[in-house]
Image (tube, each protein chain N blue to C red):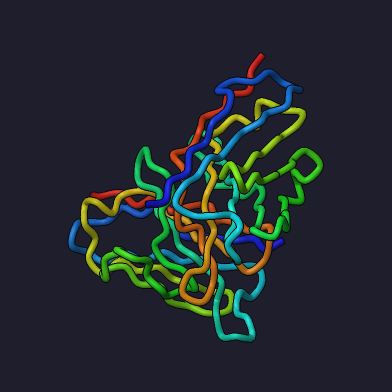
Length: 112
Length: 122
Protein backbone atom coordinates (compact mmCIF):
# COMPACT_ATOMS: atom_id res chain seq x y z
CA UNK A 1 0.00 0.00 0.00
CA UNK A 2 1.18 3.51 -0.79
CA UNK A 3 1.31 5.93 2.14
CA UNK A 4 0.79 9.63 1.49
CA UNK A 5 2.28 12.30 3.72
CA UNK A 6 1.30 15.97 3.56
CA UNK A 7 2.80 19.05 5.11
CA UNK A 8 2.02 21.34 6.68
CA UNK A 9 -1.16 20.14 8.33
CA UNK A 10 -2.23 23.70 9.09
CA UNK A 11 -1.63 26.67 6.83
CA UNK A 12 -2.68 30.18 7.86
CA UNK A 13 -2.38 32.56 4.92
CA UNK A 14 -2.99 36.27 4.41
CA UNK A 15 -5.26 37.01 1.43
CA UNK A 16 -3.24 37.86 -1.63
CA UNK A 17 -0.24 35.91 -0.43
CA UNK A 18 0.94 32.63 -2.00
CA UNK A 19 0.54 29.23 -0.38
CA UNK A 20 2.24 25.91 -0.92
CA UNK A 21 1.40 22.38 0.21
CA UNK A 22 3.76 19.43 -0.03
CA UNK A 23 2.78 15.81 -0.60
CA UNK A 24 5.09 12.84 -0.53
CA UNK A 25 4.33 9.26 -1.45
CA UNK A 26 6.02 6.15 -0.11
CA UNK A 27 6.42 4.82 -3.65
CA UNK A 28 6.93 6.51 -6.99
CA UNK A 29 3.70 7.54 -8.70
CA UNK A 30 5.43 7.92 -12.06
CA UNK A 31 4.38 5.39 -14.65
CA UNK A 32 6.20 4.40 -17.85
CA UNK A 33 3.74 6.50 -19.82
CA UNK A 34 5.19 9.60 -18.16
CA UNK A 35 2.15 10.29 -16.02
CA UNK A 36 2.23 10.82 -12.27
CA UNK A 37 -0.97 9.44 -10.74
CA UNK A 38 -1.41 12.12 -8.11
CA UNK A 39 -4.60 14.11 -7.58
CA UNK A 40 -5.41 17.09 -5.40
CA UNK A 41 -8.85 17.56 -3.84
CA UNK A 42 -10.29 20.44 -1.85
CA UNK A 43 -12.94 19.96 0.79
CA UNK A 44 -14.53 23.30 1.57
CA UNK A 45 -16.23 23.66 4.97
CA UNK A 46 -19.40 21.58 5.13
CA UNK A 47 -18.98 20.29 1.58
CA UNK A 48 -17.92 17.15 -0.23
CA UNK A 49 -14.40 16.97 -1.68
CA UNK A 50 -13.95 18.40 -5.16
CA UNK A 51 -11.27 17.64 -7.73
CA UNK A 52 -8.71 20.37 -8.25
CA UNK A 53 -5.87 18.72 -10.13
CA UNK A 54 -5.18 15.30 -11.59
CA UNK A 55 -2.04 13.71 -12.98
CA UNK A 56 -0.07 16.04 -10.69
CA UNK A 57 -0.47 19.15 -12.82
CA UNK A 58 -3.71 19.13 -14.85
CA UNK A 59 -6.30 21.53 -13.49
CA UNK A 60 -9.86 20.24 -13.51
CA UNK A 61 -12.49 22.10 -15.47
CA UNK A 62 -13.38 25.40 -13.86
CA UNK A 63 -10.46 25.47 -11.41
CA UNK A 64 -8.88 28.94 -11.34
CA UNK A 65 -5.39 29.27 -12.77
CA UNK A 66 -4.06 30.52 -9.44
CA UNK A 67 -3.93 26.81 -8.54
CA UNK A 68 -1.01 24.83 -9.93
CA UNK A 69 0.41 21.40 -9.30
CA UNK A 70 3.91 20.16 -9.85
CA UNK A 71 6.26 17.35 -8.98
CA UNK A 72 7.14 13.86 -10.06
CA UNK A 73 7.97 10.49 -8.59
CA UNK A 74 7.42 10.81 -4.86
CA UNK A 75 7.40 14.58 -4.28
CA UNK A 76 4.54 16.85 -5.26
CA UNK A 77 3.44 20.39 -4.56
CA UNK A 78 0.21 22.30 -4.80
CA UNK A 79 0.63 26.05 -5.09
CA UNK A 80 -1.85 28.86 -4.86
CA UNK A 81 -0.36 31.99 -6.37
CA UNK A 82 -2.60 34.43 -4.52
CA UNK A 83 -4.91 33.09 -1.86
CA UNK A 84 -8.52 34.23 -1.82
CA UNK A 85 -11.08 33.87 0.96
CA UNK A 86 -12.94 31.20 -1.01
CA UNK A 87 -9.87 28.94 -0.95
CA UNK A 88 -10.34 28.01 2.72
CA UNK A 89 -10.82 24.33 3.43
CA UNK A 90 -8.85 21.12 3.67
CA UNK A 91 -6.62 20.09 0.79
CA UNK A 92 -5.91 16.41 0.20
CA UNK A 93 -3.48 14.71 -2.11
CA UNK A 94 -4.45 11.24 -3.30
CA UNK A 95 -2.55 8.62 -5.21
CA UNK A 96 -4.51 6.88 -7.94
CA UNK A 97 -1.71 4.74 -9.27
CA UNK A 98 -2.86 1.58 -7.58
CA UNK A 99 -5.62 0.39 -5.31
CA UNK A 100 -6.08 0.84 -2.47
CA UNK A 101 -6.18 4.50 -3.39
CA UNK A 102 -4.84 6.55 -0.51
CA UNK A 103 -5.14 10.11 0.75
CA UNK A 104 -2.81 12.33 2.69
CA UNK A 105 -3.74 13.57 6.15
CA UNK A 106 -5.09 16.83 4.75
CA UNK A 107 -3.85 20.41 5.00
CA UNK A 108 -6.22 22.92 6.53
CA UNK A 109 -5.87 26.31 4.89
CA UNK A 110 -7.27 29.22 6.85
CA UNK A 111 -7.26 32.94 6.30
CA UNK A 112 -5.25 35.05 8.73
CA UNK B 1 -25.44 16.91 -15.17
CA UNK B 2 -23.91 14.21 -13.01
CA UNK B 3 -25.30 13.58 -9.54
CA UNK B 4 -24.68 10.96 -6.88
CA UNK B 5 -26.60 10.48 -3.68
CA UNK B 6 -25.90 8.18 -0.77
CA UNK B 7 -28.71 6.62 1.22
CA UNK B 8 -28.96 4.28 4.15
CA UNK B 9 -29.40 4.24 7.91
CA UNK B 10 -28.12 7.14 9.94
CA UNK B 11 -27.48 4.92 12.94
CA UNK B 12 -26.55 1.29 13.43
CA UNK B 13 -25.68 -0.73 16.49
CA UNK B 14 -22.31 -2.35 17.09
CA UNK B 15 -21.94 -5.74 15.35
CA UNK B 16 -24.72 -4.90 12.89
CA UNK B 17 -24.26 -4.76 9.13
CA UNK B 18 -24.39 -1.42 7.33
CA UNK B 19 -25.87 -1.23 3.85
CA UNK B 20 -25.41 1.96 1.87
CA UNK B 21 -26.75 2.69 -1.59
CA UNK B 22 -25.30 5.17 -4.06
CA UNK B 23 -27.85 6.23 -6.66
CA UNK B 24 -26.40 8.18 -9.55
CA UNK B 25 -27.43 9.88 -12.78
CA UNK B 26 -25.72 11.49 -15.72
CA UNK B 27 -23.35 8.61 -16.47
CA UNK B 28 -23.51 4.87 -16.99
CA UNK B 29 -21.60 2.17 -15.16
CA UNK B 30 -21.55 0.18 -18.37
CA UNK B 31 -19.22 2.72 -19.99
CA UNK B 32 -15.61 1.65 -20.33
CA UNK B 33 -13.21 2.92 -17.65
CA UNK B 34 -15.99 4.22 -15.42
CA UNK B 35 -16.22 3.29 -11.77
CA UNK B 36 -17.93 4.21 -8.52
CA UNK B 37 -15.98 4.31 -5.31
CA UNK B 38 -16.73 4.70 -1.61
CA UNK B 39 -14.69 6.94 0.65
CA UNK B 40 -15.41 7.70 4.31
CA UNK B 41 -14.44 10.41 6.76
CA UNK B 42 -14.58 10.08 10.55
CA UNK B 43 -15.66 13.31 12.24
CA UNK B 44 -12.85 15.85 12.02
CA UNK B 45 -10.49 13.41 10.35
CA UNK B 46 -9.07 12.64 6.94
CA UNK B 47 -10.60 10.86 3.98
CA UNK B 48 -10.24 7.07 3.87
CA UNK B 49 -10.69 5.06 0.69
CA UNK B 50 -12.87 1.97 1.08
CA UNK B 51 -13.81 0.30 -2.19
CA UNK B 52 -14.27 0.73 -5.93
CA UNK B 53 -16.26 -1.11 -8.60
CA UNK B 54 -15.51 -0.69 -12.29
CA UNK B 55 -17.76 -0.93 -15.33
CA UNK B 56 -16.53 -4.48 -15.99
CA UNK B 57 -17.39 -5.55 -12.40
CA UNK B 58 -13.74 -5.48 -11.31
CA UNK B 59 -13.91 -4.83 -7.56
CA UNK B 60 -11.21 -3.40 -5.33
CA UNK B 61 -11.18 -3.13 -1.55
CA UNK B 62 -9.18 -1.58 1.23
CA UNK B 63 -7.00 -4.43 2.52
CA UNK B 64 -7.60 -3.45 6.13
CA UNK B 65 -11.38 -3.71 5.66
CA UNK B 66 -11.59 -6.29 2.92
CA UNK B 67 -13.06 -8.99 5.13
CA UNK B 68 -15.92 -6.70 6.09
CA UNK B 69 -16.75 -4.99 2.78
CA UNK B 70 -18.78 -5.97 -0.25
CA UNK B 71 -19.43 -3.68 -3.19
CA UNK B 72 -21.94 -4.47 -5.91
CA UNK B 73 -23.42 -2.63 -8.86
CA UNK B 74 -26.80 -2.67 -10.53
CA UNK B 75 -26.25 -1.03 -13.88
CA UNK B 76 -29.92 -1.07 -14.81
CA UNK B 77 -30.85 0.84 -11.65
CA UNK B 78 -27.79 3.14 -11.70
CA UNK B 79 -26.92 2.06 -8.19
CA UNK B 80 -23.89 0.84 -6.28
CA UNK B 81 -24.31 -0.82 -2.91
CA UNK B 82 -21.69 -1.06 -0.17
CA UNK B 83 -22.16 -3.41 2.76
CA UNK B 84 -19.95 -3.35 5.81
CA UNK B 85 -20.31 -6.06 8.41
CA UNK B 86 -19.59 -6.07 12.13
CA UNK B 87 -19.90 -2.32 12.59
CA UNK B 88 -18.01 -0.67 15.44
CA UNK B 89 -18.14 2.83 16.91
CA UNK B 90 -14.84 3.62 15.14
CA UNK B 91 -16.73 3.23 11.86
CA UNK B 92 -18.74 6.35 12.67
CA UNK B 93 -18.35 8.96 9.98
CA UNK B 94 -19.57 10.41 6.71
CA UNK B 95 -19.63 7.97 3.82
CA UNK B 96 -19.23 9.34 0.29
CA UNK B 97 -19.68 7.71 -3.07
CA UNK B 98 -17.78 9.16 -6.01
CA UNK B 99 -17.72 8.80 -9.79
CA UNK B 100 -14.39 7.68 -11.20
CA UNK B 101 -13.76 8.40 -14.86
CA UNK B 102 -11.03 9.15 -17.34
CA UNK B 103 -9.44 12.55 -16.77
CA UNK B 104 -6.75 13.97 -19.04
CA UNK B 105 -5.04 10.65 -19.69
CA UNK B 106 -5.57 9.29 -16.20
CA UNK B 107 -8.56 8.71 -13.95
CA UNK B 108 -10.06 10.81 -11.22
CA UNK B 109 -12.93 11.04 -8.78
CA UNK B 110 -14.61 13.85 -10.67
CA UNK B 111 -18.00 13.89 -8.95
CA UNK B 112 -18.95 13.21 -5.35
CA UNK B 113 -22.17 12.66 -3.49
CA UNK B 114 -23.16 14.87 -0.59
CA UNK B 115 -22.23 12.14 1.86
CA UNK B 116 -24.26 10.40 4.51
CA UNK B 117 -23.40 10.45 8.21
CA UNK B 118 -23.49 7.06 9.88
CA UNK B 119 -23.28 6.78 13.65
CA UNK B 120 -22.46 3.48 15.30
CA UNK B 121 -23.84 3.39 18.81
CA UNK B 122 -25.77 1.07 21.06
